Amino acid sequence: MRVLWPWFLLVLLLLPAMVAFYLWILRRKRRLALRYSSLSLIRQALPRRASWRRHLPFAVFLSALACLSIAIARPIAEIEVPLTRTTIILAMDVSRSMCATDVEPNRLTVAQKAALAFVEELSGGTRLGVVAFSDLAQIVVPPTTDKKVLRQAIEALTTSTGTAIGSATITSINAIAQVNPDVGRVGVSLGIVPPGADRYQPDIIVLLTDGANTRGPRPLDAAQQAADRRLRIFTVGFGTTQPGSMVCTPQQLGSDVLGDAGLGGGFGGGFGGRGERFRRFLLLDEPTLQGVADLTGGAYYRAENADQLLQVFLRLPGQITLQKQAVELTAVFSAAGALLVLLAVALSLWWNRFP
Image (cartoon, rainbow, N blue to C red):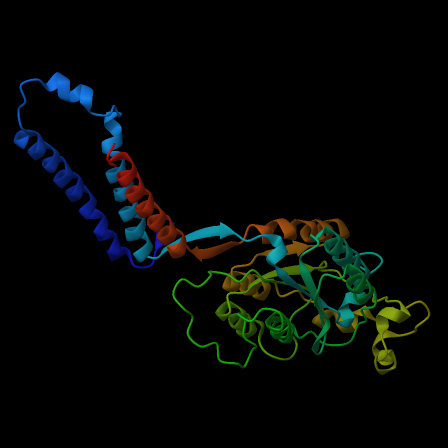
Protein backbone atom coordinates (compact mmCIF):
# COMPACT_ATOMS: atom_id res chain seq x y z
CA MET A 1 0.00 0.00 0.00
CA ARG A 2 1.16 3.54 -0.76
CA VAL A 3 -0.24 7.02 -0.13
CA LEU A 4 -0.68 9.97 -2.46
CA TRP A 5 -0.16 12.65 0.21
CA PRO A 6 2.49 11.15 2.54
CA TRP A 7 3.08 14.38 4.45
CA PHE A 8 -0.33 13.98 6.11
CA LEU A 9 1.04 10.89 7.85
CA LEU A 10 2.86 13.29 10.16
CA VAL A 11 -0.46 13.58 11.99
CA LEU A 12 0.25 10.08 13.34
CA LEU A 13 3.02 11.63 15.45
CA LEU A 14 0.29 13.13 17.63
CA LEU A 15 -0.77 9.68 18.81
CA PRO A 16 2.26 9.03 21.08
CA ALA A 17 1.84 12.54 22.50
CA MET A 18 -1.82 11.82 23.27
CA VAL A 19 -0.87 8.55 24.99
CA ALA A 20 1.70 10.38 27.11
CA PHE A 21 -0.87 13.05 28.01
CA TYR A 22 -3.41 10.37 28.94
CA LEU A 23 -0.95 8.64 31.26
CA TRP A 24 -0.06 11.97 32.85
CA ILE A 25 -3.74 12.66 33.54
CA LEU A 26 -4.13 9.24 35.20
CA ARG A 27 -1.13 9.82 37.48
CA ARG A 28 -2.38 13.30 38.35
CA LYS A 29 -5.78 11.93 39.32
CA ARG A 30 -4.17 9.42 41.65
CA ARG A 31 -2.15 12.14 43.36
CA LEU A 32 -5.19 14.35 43.86
CA ALA A 33 -7.48 11.58 45.06
CA LEU A 34 -8.90 12.00 48.59
CA ARG A 35 -7.70 9.63 51.25
CA TYR A 36 -10.54 7.90 53.00
CA SER A 37 -10.21 6.16 56.34
CA SER A 38 -11.67 2.95 55.02
CA LEU A 39 -10.91 2.31 51.36
CA SER A 40 -12.22 -1.23 51.61
CA LEU A 41 -15.74 0.02 52.17
CA ILE A 42 -15.55 2.26 49.11
CA ARG A 43 -14.22 -0.57 46.93
CA GLN A 44 -17.11 -2.77 48.04
CA ALA A 45 -19.60 -0.03 47.17
CA LEU A 46 -18.25 0.54 43.67
CA PRO A 47 -19.42 -1.73 40.80
CA ARG A 48 -16.87 -4.37 39.87
CA ARG A 49 -15.26 -3.95 36.44
CA ALA A 50 -12.08 -5.12 34.79
CA SER A 51 -9.27 -2.58 34.96
CA TRP A 52 -8.74 -2.72 31.21
CA ARG A 53 -12.28 -1.48 30.52
CA ARG A 54 -11.53 2.04 31.68
CA HIS A 55 -8.73 2.30 29.09
CA LEU A 56 -10.49 0.58 26.17
CA PRO A 57 -12.52 3.63 24.96
CA PHE A 58 -9.33 5.68 24.77
CA ALA A 59 -7.53 2.91 22.86
CA VAL A 60 -10.42 2.65 20.39
CA PHE A 61 -10.41 6.43 20.00
CA LEU A 62 -6.69 6.38 19.18
CA SER A 63 -7.32 3.70 16.56
CA ALA A 64 -10.01 5.92 15.05
CA LEU A 65 -7.59 8.86 14.83
CA ALA A 66 -5.00 6.60 13.18
CA CYS A 67 -7.52 5.49 10.54
CA LEU A 68 -8.61 9.06 9.85
CA SER A 69 -5.00 10.22 9.60
CA ILE A 70 -4.26 7.52 7.01
CA ALA A 71 -7.48 8.41 5.18
CA ILE A 72 -6.47 12.04 4.62
CA ALA A 73 -3.14 10.79 3.23
CA ARG A 74 -5.15 9.03 0.46
CA PRO A 75 -3.93 5.40 0.63
CA ILE A 76 -3.66 3.36 -2.57
CA ALA A 77 -3.58 -0.44 -2.73
CA GLU A 78 -2.69 -2.68 -5.66
CA ILE A 79 -5.25 -5.44 -6.20
CA GLU A 80 -5.66 -8.15 -8.81
CA VAL A 81 -8.37 -7.40 -11.36
CA PRO A 82 -10.79 -10.30 -11.92
CA LEU A 83 -10.74 -11.66 -15.47
CA THR A 84 -14.51 -11.13 -15.67
CA ARG A 85 -13.89 -7.37 -15.68
CA THR A 86 -11.62 -7.61 -18.70
CA THR A 87 -12.32 -6.81 -22.33
CA ILE A 88 -9.89 -8.55 -24.68
CA ILE A 89 -9.35 -7.58 -28.29
CA LEU A 90 -7.80 -10.32 -30.39
CA ALA A 91 -6.10 -8.65 -33.36
CA MET A 92 -5.24 -11.31 -35.96
CA ASP A 93 -2.99 -10.90 -38.96
CA VAL A 94 -4.80 -12.11 -42.10
CA SER A 95 -2.19 -10.98 -44.60
CA ARG A 96 -1.55 -13.31 -47.52
CA SER A 97 1.62 -14.59 -45.83
CA MET A 98 -0.64 -16.44 -43.38
CA CYS A 99 -1.08 -18.94 -46.23
CA ALA A 100 2.51 -20.12 -45.68
CA THR A 101 2.74 -23.88 -45.13
CA ASP A 102 5.76 -23.97 -42.84
CA VAL A 103 3.16 -24.69 -40.16
CA GLU A 104 0.84 -27.34 -41.55
CA PRO A 105 -1.67 -27.08 -43.09
CA ASN A 106 -0.96 -23.32 -43.09
CA ARG A 107 -0.39 -20.52 -40.60
CA LEU A 108 -3.92 -19.14 -40.74
CA THR A 109 -5.58 -22.49 -40.03
CA VAL A 110 -3.33 -23.09 -37.02
CA ALA A 111 -3.90 -19.54 -35.76
CA GLN A 112 -7.65 -20.01 -36.10
CA LYS A 113 -7.56 -23.22 -34.07
CA ALA A 114 -5.49 -21.57 -31.34
CA ALA A 115 -7.87 -18.60 -31.27
CA LEU A 116 -10.87 -20.92 -30.97
CA ALA A 117 -9.21 -22.68 -28.03
CA PHE A 118 -8.59 -19.25 -26.49
CA VAL A 119 -12.29 -18.44 -26.82
CA GLU A 120 -13.26 -21.64 -25.03
CA GLU A 121 -10.82 -20.97 -22.17
CA LEU A 122 -12.24 -17.56 -21.29
CA SER A 123 -14.60 -17.23 -18.35
CA GLY A 124 -18.24 -16.52 -19.07
CA GLY A 125 -18.16 -12.83 -18.10
CA THR A 126 -15.15 -11.86 -20.21
CA ARG A 127 -15.86 -9.82 -23.33
CA LEU A 128 -13.80 -10.68 -26.40
CA GLY A 129 -13.62 -8.73 -29.65
CA VAL A 130 -11.90 -9.68 -32.89
CA VAL A 131 -9.96 -7.33 -35.17
CA ALA A 132 -8.63 -8.63 -38.50
CA PHE A 133 -5.87 -6.77 -40.31
CA SER A 134 -3.98 -6.97 -43.58
CA ASP A 135 -3.68 -3.81 -45.68
CA LEU A 136 -6.40 -2.32 -43.44
CA ALA A 137 -7.75 -3.19 -40.01
CA GLN A 138 -11.40 -3.69 -39.17
CA ILE A 139 -13.48 -4.79 -36.20
CA VAL A 140 -14.86 -8.19 -37.17
CA VAL A 141 -16.69 -8.72 -33.87
CA PRO A 142 -17.18 -5.94 -31.29
CA PRO A 143 -16.50 -7.01 -27.68
CA THR A 144 -19.03 -9.68 -26.74
CA THR A 145 -19.55 -12.68 -24.47
CA ASP A 146 -21.29 -14.65 -27.21
CA LYS A 147 -18.85 -17.48 -27.96
CA LYS A 148 -20.92 -18.74 -30.89
CA VAL A 149 -20.56 -15.41 -32.70
CA LEU A 150 -16.84 -15.36 -31.93
CA ARG A 151 -16.31 -18.89 -33.27
CA GLN A 152 -18.17 -18.11 -36.48
CA ALA A 153 -16.15 -14.94 -37.05
CA ILE A 154 -12.79 -16.62 -36.46
CA GLU A 155 -13.64 -19.54 -38.71
CA ALA A 156 -14.68 -17.15 -41.51
CA LEU A 157 -11.46 -15.08 -41.60
CA THR A 158 -10.05 -14.45 -45.09
CA THR A 159 -6.69 -13.17 -46.25
CA SER A 160 -5.57 -10.12 -48.20
CA THR A 161 -2.31 -8.35 -49.03
CA GLY A 162 -0.41 -6.05 -46.69
CA THR A 163 0.32 -5.97 -42.96
CA ALA A 164 -0.93 -2.92 -41.04
CA ILE A 165 0.14 -3.60 -37.45
CA GLY A 166 -0.16 0.04 -36.38
CA SER A 167 -3.65 0.33 -37.83
CA ALA A 168 -4.63 -2.89 -36.03
CA THR A 169 -3.48 -1.42 -32.72
CA ILE A 170 -5.46 1.80 -33.21
CA THR A 171 -8.56 -0.11 -34.30
CA SER A 172 -8.26 -2.32 -31.21
CA ILE A 173 -8.00 0.74 -28.96
CA ASN A 174 -11.14 2.19 -30.50
CA ALA A 175 -12.96 -1.14 -30.06
CA ILE A 176 -12.17 -1.05 -26.33
CA ALA A 177 -13.24 2.60 -26.15
CA GLN A 178 -16.71 1.54 -27.27
CA VAL A 179 -17.25 -0.44 -24.06
CA ASN A 180 -14.93 1.31 -21.59
CA PRO A 181 -15.68 5.02 -21.08
CA ASP A 182 -12.30 5.49 -19.37
CA VAL A 183 -10.50 4.70 -22.64
CA GLY A 184 -10.72 7.50 -25.17
CA ARG A 185 -10.76 6.88 -28.90
CA VAL A 186 -7.57 7.66 -30.77
CA GLY A 187 -7.76 11.26 -31.94
CA VAL A 188 -9.87 12.32 -28.95
CA SER A 189 -8.20 14.33 -26.20
CA LEU A 190 -7.59 12.24 -23.09
CA GLY A 191 -7.73 15.22 -20.74
CA ILE A 192 -5.87 15.17 -17.44
CA VAL A 193 -5.38 11.81 -15.75
CA PRO A 194 -6.57 12.22 -12.13
CA PRO A 195 -4.21 11.39 -9.24
CA GLY A 196 -4.47 7.79 -8.15
CA ALA A 197 -5.75 6.59 -11.52
CA ASP A 198 -5.32 2.90 -12.27
CA ARG A 199 -1.88 1.87 -13.39
CA TYR A 200 -3.45 -0.26 -16.12
CA GLN A 201 -6.92 -0.54 -17.53
CA PRO A 202 -8.48 -3.98 -17.05
CA ASP A 203 -8.60 -4.34 -20.85
CA ILE A 204 -6.07 -6.17 -23.02
CA ILE A 205 -5.01 -6.27 -26.68
CA VAL A 206 -3.60 -9.54 -28.01
CA LEU A 207 -1.91 -8.98 -31.38
CA LEU A 208 -0.81 -11.92 -33.53
CA THR A 209 1.25 -11.43 -36.67
CA ASP A 210 3.69 -13.36 -38.85
CA GLY A 211 5.37 -10.41 -40.55
CA ALA A 212 6.39 -6.77 -40.36
CA ASN A 213 4.41 -3.58 -40.74
CA THR A 214 4.14 -2.61 -44.43
CA ARG A 215 1.71 0.31 -44.35
CA GLY A 216 -0.23 2.63 -42.09
CA PRO A 217 0.98 4.12 -38.77
CA ARG A 218 4.23 2.92 -37.27
CA PRO A 219 3.55 0.17 -34.69
CA LEU A 220 5.46 1.95 -31.92
CA ASP A 221 3.57 5.19 -32.53
CA ALA A 222 0.29 3.29 -32.28
CA ALA A 223 1.56 1.47 -29.17
CA GLN A 224 2.21 4.85 -27.55
CA GLN A 225 -1.49 5.62 -27.98
CA ALA A 226 -2.25 2.42 -26.05
CA ALA A 227 0.32 3.25 -23.38
CA ASP A 228 -1.21 6.71 -22.94
CA ARG A 229 -4.52 4.98 -22.22
CA ARG A 230 -2.90 2.46 -19.86
CA LEU A 231 -3.76 -0.46 -22.18
CA ARG A 232 -1.42 -3.43 -22.30
CA ILE A 233 -0.60 -5.21 -25.55
CA PHE A 234 0.48 -8.85 -25.67
CA THR A 235 2.21 -9.52 -28.99
CA VAL A 236 2.62 -12.94 -30.60
CA GLY A 237 5.10 -13.58 -33.40
CA PHE A 238 4.12 -16.66 -35.40
CA GLY A 239 5.86 -18.74 -38.06
CA THR A 240 9.34 -19.96 -38.95
CA THR A 241 12.09 -18.39 -41.02
CA GLN A 242 11.34 -20.86 -43.86
CA PRO A 243 7.76 -20.08 -44.95
CA GLY A 244 7.74 -22.48 -47.90
CA SER A 245 4.88 -22.41 -50.38
CA MET A 246 1.62 -20.48 -50.07
CA VAL A 247 -1.48 -22.63 -49.86
CA CYS A 248 -4.85 -21.42 -48.60
CA THR A 249 -8.34 -22.75 -49.13
CA PRO A 250 -10.67 -20.80 -51.43
CA GLN A 251 -12.52 -19.56 -48.34
CA GLN A 252 -9.30 -18.30 -46.75
CA LEU A 253 -8.27 -16.54 -49.96
CA GLY A 254 -11.28 -14.26 -49.84
CA SER A 255 -13.07 -12.31 -52.55
CA ASP A 256 -9.96 -10.55 -53.88
CA VAL A 257 -8.21 -13.74 -54.92
CA LEU A 258 -8.40 -12.89 -58.65
CA GLY A 259 -6.42 -9.74 -58.00
CA ASP A 260 -3.59 -11.87 -56.66
CA ALA A 261 -3.67 -14.57 -59.32
CA GLY A 262 -0.38 -13.40 -60.76
CA LEU A 263 1.29 -13.76 -57.37
CA GLY A 264 -0.05 -17.06 -56.26
CA GLY A 265 -0.39 -19.35 -59.21
CA GLY A 266 -3.19 -21.92 -59.62
CA PHE A 267 -6.23 -22.15 -57.38
CA GLY A 268 -7.51 -25.73 -57.01
CA GLY A 269 -7.61 -26.26 -53.22
CA GLY A 270 -5.61 -23.09 -52.70
CA PHE A 271 -2.70 -21.45 -54.38
CA GLY A 272 0.89 -22.56 -54.29
CA GLY A 273 4.33 -22.30 -55.80
CA ARG A 274 6.40 -19.19 -56.36
CA GLY A 275 6.65 -18.52 -52.62
CA GLU A 276 9.97 -16.80 -53.24
CA ARG A 277 8.10 -13.69 -54.43
CA PHE A 278 6.60 -13.34 -50.95
CA ARG A 279 9.71 -13.83 -48.86
CA ARG A 280 10.40 -10.16 -48.42
CA PHE A 281 6.97 -9.79 -46.84
CA LEU A 282 7.42 -12.75 -44.48
CA LEU A 283 10.18 -11.46 -42.23
CA LEU A 284 8.95 -11.31 -38.64
CA ASP A 285 9.86 -7.99 -37.01
CA GLU A 286 10.55 -9.28 -33.50
CA PRO A 287 12.28 -6.12 -32.21
CA THR A 288 9.18 -4.06 -33.01
CA LEU A 289 6.82 -6.61 -31.44
CA GLN A 290 8.99 -6.72 -28.35
CA GLY A 291 9.06 -2.93 -28.28
CA VAL A 292 5.27 -2.70 -28.50
CA ALA A 293 4.90 -5.11 -25.58
CA ASP A 294 7.54 -3.34 -23.47
CA LEU A 295 6.11 0.11 -24.14
CA THR A 296 2.62 -0.88 -23.00
CA GLY A 297 3.53 -3.19 -20.10
CA GLY A 298 2.55 -6.37 -21.94
CA ALA A 299 4.67 -9.32 -23.05
CA TYR A 300 6.00 -10.76 -26.30
CA TYR A 301 5.67 -14.44 -27.21
CA ARG A 302 7.31 -16.38 -30.05
CA ALA A 303 5.66 -19.44 -31.60
CA GLU A 304 7.04 -21.49 -34.49
CA ASN A 305 4.57 -24.37 -34.57
CA ALA A 306 1.01 -25.29 -33.69
CA ASP A 307 1.80 -26.60 -30.20
CA GLN A 308 3.77 -23.50 -29.22
CA LEU A 309 1.05 -21.17 -30.48
CA LEU A 310 -1.65 -23.11 -28.65
CA GLN A 311 0.35 -22.94 -25.42
CA VAL A 312 0.78 -19.18 -25.83
CA PHE A 313 -2.97 -18.68 -26.22
CA LEU A 314 -3.83 -20.98 -23.33
CA ARG A 315 -1.31 -19.17 -21.12
CA LEU A 316 -2.70 -15.71 -21.84
CA PRO A 317 -5.77 -15.82 -19.53
CA GLY A 318 -3.49 -16.52 -16.57
CA GLN A 319 -1.24 -13.61 -17.54
CA ILE A 320 -4.21 -11.31 -17.92
CA THR A 321 -5.65 -12.32 -14.53
CA LEU A 322 -2.42 -11.26 -12.83
CA GLN A 323 -2.74 -7.63 -13.86
CA LYS A 324 -2.81 -5.11 -11.03
CA GLN A 325 -5.14 -2.21 -10.50
CA ALA A 326 -4.63 0.68 -8.08
CA VAL A 327 -7.62 1.33 -5.84
CA GLU A 328 -7.90 4.30 -3.50
CA LEU A 329 -8.86 3.28 0.05
CA THR A 330 -9.66 6.73 1.46
CA ALA A 331 -13.35 5.92 1.86
CA VAL A 332 -12.56 2.63 3.60
CA PHE A 333 -10.27 4.22 6.19
CA SER A 334 -12.66 7.13 6.67
CA ALA A 335 -15.58 4.80 7.33
CA ALA A 336 -13.48 2.69 9.71
CA GLY A 337 -12.36 5.81 11.58
CA ALA A 338 -15.91 7.10 11.93
CA LEU A 339 -17.17 3.73 13.21
CA LEU A 340 -14.34 3.53 15.73
CA VAL A 341 -15.15 7.03 17.03
CA LEU A 342 -18.77 6.02 17.54
CA LEU A 343 -17.67 2.80 19.24
CA ALA A 344 -15.33 4.68 21.58
CA VAL A 345 -18.10 7.09 22.59
CA ALA A 346 -20.59 4.25 23.08
CA LEU A 347 -18.17 2.25 25.26
CA SER A 348 -17.34 5.29 27.34
CA LEU A 349 -21.01 6.09 27.99
CA TRP A 350 -21.93 2.46 28.69
CA TRP A 351 -19.16 1.61 31.12
CA ASN A 352 -19.24 4.97 32.91
CA ARG A 353 -22.99 5.21 33.27
CA PHE A 354 -24.43 5.80 36.74
CA PRO A 355 -25.43 2.60 38.55
